[in-house]
Image (cartoon, rainbow, N blue to C red):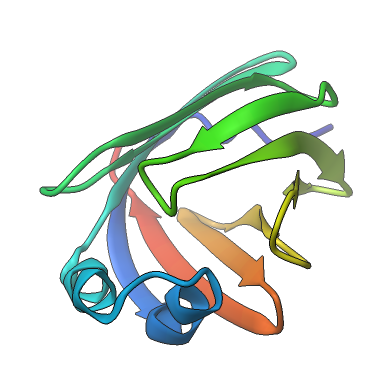
Amino acid sequence: MLPNFSGYYRFVSQENMDNYLRALDINVVLRKVVCLLKPDKEIIHTGDHMVIRTITSLRDYVMDFDLGVQFEEDLGPVDGRKCLTTVFWEGDQLVCEQIGEKRNRGWRHWLEGDRLHLRMTAEDEVCVQVFQKVK
């Protein structure tokens, strides 16, 4: 049985965010600001439909999608790009492939107990974030 990711998660830690943002061509000022943010995640997971809300004091970002169905994702709030995105299961991990200007762009979520892990990739850079489930 696949895990249900529904819940509210608080930021715990992150590694290599600055280099990940640099790979996305984010300017130095915005990179410094983003590296200071401590985002929360709210996930609503109902069957094959998911809403993932990333909540920060600067700006929120919402992904609303059906698993296994490709859609055009507007990443304007992140880096000004659009890409073709597909989110699907790979074992018990939620995997996102984002096809666009940047090679190897995407992410994967997985659970370890009450901790939500997020591994984001762009070009050759990898950023890892960890969140603790609070409800």
